Length: 185
Image (cartoon, rainbow, N blue to C red; front, side, top):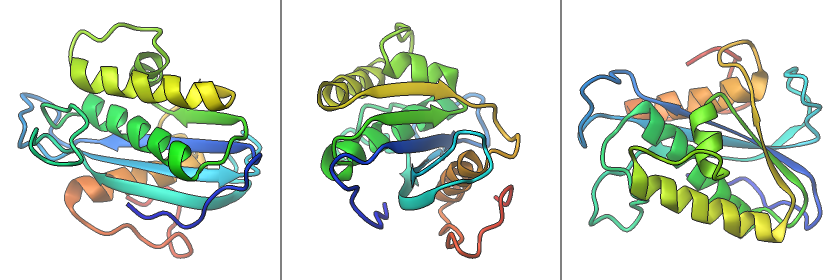
Protein backbone atom coordinates (compact mmCIF):
# COMPACT_ATOMS: atom_id res chain seq x y z
CA UNK A 1 0.00 0.00 0.00
CA UNK A 2 1.34 3.44 -0.90
CA UNK A 3 0.58 6.51 1.14
CA UNK A 4 1.73 9.77 -0.37
CA UNK A 5 0.96 12.17 2.46
CA UNK A 6 -0.95 12.74 5.66
CA UNK A 7 -4.02 14.93 5.79
CA UNK A 8 -3.91 18.21 7.70
CA UNK A 9 -5.91 17.86 10.94
CA UNK A 10 -9.25 19.40 9.88
CA UNK A 11 -9.11 18.85 6.12
CA UNK A 12 -12.31 17.59 4.51
CA UNK A 13 -11.58 14.41 2.59
CA UNK A 14 -13.26 12.24 0.01
CA UNK A 15 -12.12 8.62 -0.22
CA UNK A 16 -13.01 6.58 -3.29
CA UNK A 17 -12.79 2.80 -3.01
CA UNK A 18 -13.23 -0.17 -5.31
CA UNK A 19 -12.71 -3.91 -5.46
CA UNK A 20 -11.93 -6.21 -8.36
CA UNK A 21 -12.34 -9.93 -9.04
CA UNK A 22 -12.34 -11.26 -12.60
CA UNK A 23 -13.75 -14.73 -12.02
CA UNK A 24 -16.46 -14.00 -9.48
CA UNK A 25 -18.17 -17.41 -9.72
CA UNK A 26 -17.38 -20.45 -7.57
CA UNK A 27 -14.89 -18.37 -5.59
CA UNK A 28 -12.39 -19.91 -3.19
CA UNK A 29 -9.62 -18.69 -0.92
CA UNK A 30 -7.32 -18.91 -3.96
CA UNK A 31 -9.45 -16.71 -6.24
CA UNK A 32 -7.47 -13.51 -6.87
CA UNK A 33 -9.20 -10.32 -5.80
CA UNK A 34 -7.84 -6.81 -5.27
CA UNK A 35 -8.81 -3.59 -3.56
CA UNK A 36 -7.92 0.07 -4.04
CA UNK A 37 -8.67 3.46 -2.57
CA UNK A 38 -7.88 7.08 -3.42
CA UNK A 39 -7.88 10.00 -0.96
CA UNK A 40 -8.84 13.36 -2.48
CA UNK A 41 -8.84 16.89 -1.06
CA UNK A 42 -11.02 19.48 -2.80
CA UNK A 43 -13.27 17.07 -4.70
CA UNK A 44 -16.38 18.82 -5.97
CA UNK A 45 -18.39 15.61 -6.13
CA UNK A 46 -19.37 16.00 -9.77
CA UNK A 47 -17.08 13.28 -11.10
CA UNK A 48 -14.85 15.63 -13.08
CA UNK A 49 -11.71 14.79 -11.16
CA UNK A 50 -11.54 18.02 -9.20
CA UNK A 51 -9.20 18.12 -6.25
CA UNK A 52 -5.82 16.66 -5.46
CA UNK A 53 -4.92 13.09 -4.60
CA UNK A 54 -3.00 13.04 -1.33
CA UNK A 55 -2.83 9.27 -0.87
CA UNK A 56 -3.81 6.01 -2.46
CA UNK A 57 -3.51 2.39 -1.52
CA UNK A 58 -4.08 -1.01 -3.06
CA UNK A 59 -3.42 -4.67 -2.49
CA UNK A 60 -4.68 -8.21 -2.77
CA UNK A 61 -7.50 -9.57 -0.65
CA UNK A 62 -5.86 -11.66 2.08
CA UNK A 63 -7.61 -14.96 2.80
CA UNK A 64 -4.89 -16.59 4.91
CA UNK A 65 -6.03 -16.59 8.54
CA UNK A 66 -2.40 -16.82 9.69
CA UNK A 67 -1.32 -13.66 7.82
CA UNK A 68 -0.77 -10.56 9.94
CA UNK A 69 -2.87 -8.44 7.56
CA UNK A 70 -5.88 -10.80 7.44
CA UNK A 71 -9.11 -8.83 7.94
CA UNK A 72 -11.56 -11.73 7.86
CA UNK A 73 -11.95 -12.56 4.15
CA UNK A 74 -12.38 -16.28 3.59
CA UNK A 75 -12.58 -16.13 -0.21
CA UNK A 76 -11.45 -13.82 -2.96
CA UNK A 77 -14.58 -12.26 -4.47
CA UNK A 78 -15.89 -8.93 -5.63
CA UNK A 79 -17.68 -8.43 -2.31
CA UNK A 80 -14.64 -9.30 -0.17
CA UNK A 81 -12.57 -6.99 -2.39
CA UNK A 82 -15.03 -4.11 -1.91
CA UNK A 83 -15.16 -4.68 1.86
CA UNK A 84 -11.36 -4.91 2.02
CA UNK A 85 -11.09 -1.60 0.15
CA UNK A 86 -13.39 0.04 2.70
CA UNK A 87 -11.41 -1.49 5.58
CA UNK A 88 -8.08 -0.24 4.26
CA UNK A 89 -9.51 3.22 3.53
CA UNK A 90 -10.87 3.42 7.08
CA UNK A 91 -7.53 2.23 8.50
CA UNK A 92 -5.81 5.01 6.53
CA UNK A 93 -8.21 7.52 8.06
CA UNK A 94 -7.36 6.31 11.56
CA UNK A 95 -3.60 6.59 11.05
CA UNK A 96 -3.07 9.39 8.51
CA UNK A 97 -6.43 11.06 7.89
CA UNK A 98 -6.65 13.88 10.42
CA UNK A 99 -10.10 14.60 11.88
CA UNK A 100 -11.97 16.49 9.15
CA UNK A 101 -15.34 15.45 7.77
CA UNK A 102 -15.05 12.57 5.32
CA UNK A 103 -17.16 11.10 2.53
CA UNK A 104 -16.49 7.52 1.47
CA UNK A 105 -17.58 7.03 -2.15
CA UNK A 106 -17.80 3.74 -3.98
CA UNK A 107 -19.79 1.82 -6.55
CA UNK A 108 -20.72 -0.98 -4.13
CA UNK A 109 -23.97 -0.38 -2.28
CA UNK A 110 -23.28 -3.71 -0.56
CA UNK A 111 -19.99 -2.52 0.95
CA UNK A 112 -21.34 0.90 1.93
CA UNK A 113 -24.42 -0.53 3.62
CA UNK A 114 -22.50 -3.30 5.40
CA UNK A 115 -19.86 -0.81 6.60
CA UNK A 116 -22.41 1.66 7.97
CA UNK A 117 -24.37 -1.12 9.68
CA UNK A 118 -27.47 -0.58 7.53
CA UNK A 119 -27.43 -4.18 6.27
CA UNK A 120 -26.67 -7.40 8.08
CA UNK A 121 -24.09 -9.61 6.42
CA UNK A 122 -25.28 -13.03 5.28
CA UNK A 123 -21.79 -13.99 4.09
CA UNK A 124 -18.30 -12.61 4.75
CA UNK A 125 -19.39 -12.18 8.37
CA UNK A 126 -15.94 -11.83 9.95
CA UNK A 127 -14.80 -9.31 7.36
CA UNK A 128 -18.10 -7.42 7.62
CA UNK A 129 -17.78 -7.24 11.41
CA UNK A 130 -14.22 -5.89 11.10
CA UNK A 131 -15.33 -3.26 8.58
CA UNK A 132 -18.26 -2.18 10.77
CA UNK A 133 -15.93 -1.91 13.76
CA UNK A 134 -13.54 0.30 11.78
CA UNK A 135 -16.46 2.44 10.52
CA UNK A 136 -17.68 2.95 14.09
CA UNK A 137 -14.18 3.84 15.29
CA UNK A 138 -13.70 6.41 12.52
CA UNK A 139 -17.23 7.83 13.02
CA UNK A 140 -16.45 8.49 16.69
CA UNK A 141 -13.61 10.82 15.66
CA UNK A 142 -15.15 12.63 12.68
CA UNK A 143 -18.25 13.14 10.59
CA UNK A 144 -18.32 10.14 8.23
CA UNK A 145 -20.75 9.59 5.36
CA UNK A 146 -21.02 7.00 2.62
CA UNK A 147 -22.15 7.84 -0.92
CA UNK A 148 -22.84 5.52 -3.82
CA UNK A 149 -21.46 6.40 -7.27
CA UNK A 150 -22.28 4.58 -10.49
CA UNK A 151 -19.56 2.26 -11.73
CA UNK A 152 -17.66 2.88 -14.96
CA UNK A 153 -19.42 6.13 -15.79
CA UNK A 154 -16.34 8.33 -16.11
CA UNK A 155 -16.20 9.36 -12.44
CA UNK A 156 -12.44 10.10 -12.45
CA UNK A 157 -11.48 9.14 -8.89
CA UNK A 158 -13.73 6.08 -8.85
CA UNK A 159 -12.02 5.02 -12.07
CA UNK A 160 -8.64 5.49 -10.36
CA UNK A 161 -9.74 3.29 -7.44
CA UNK A 162 -10.91 0.70 -9.99
CA UNK A 163 -7.51 0.84 -11.71
CA UNK A 164 -5.70 0.31 -8.40
CA UNK A 165 -7.95 -2.63 -7.45
CA UNK A 166 -7.72 -4.27 -10.88
CA UNK A 167 -3.94 -4.01 -11.00
CA UNK A 168 -3.61 -5.36 -7.44
CA UNK A 169 -5.86 -8.29 -8.33
CA UNK A 170 -3.60 -9.07 -11.30
CA UNK A 171 -0.43 -8.66 -9.22
CA UNK A 172 0.67 -5.68 -11.33
CA UNK A 173 1.88 -2.25 -10.27
CA UNK A 174 -0.56 0.59 -10.99
CA UNK A 175 0.24 3.27 -13.51
CA UNK A 176 1.66 6.33 -11.74
CA UNK A 177 -1.07 8.93 -11.29
CA UNK A 178 0.68 11.43 -13.59
CA UNK A 179 0.67 8.91 -16.47
CA UNK A 180 -2.65 7.20 -15.83
CA UNK A 181 -5.61 7.91 -18.11
CA UNK A 182 -9.16 7.56 -16.71
CA UNK A 183 -10.78 4.33 -17.83
CA UNK A 184 -7.44 2.55 -18.27
CA UNK A 185 -7.25 -0.66 -16.31
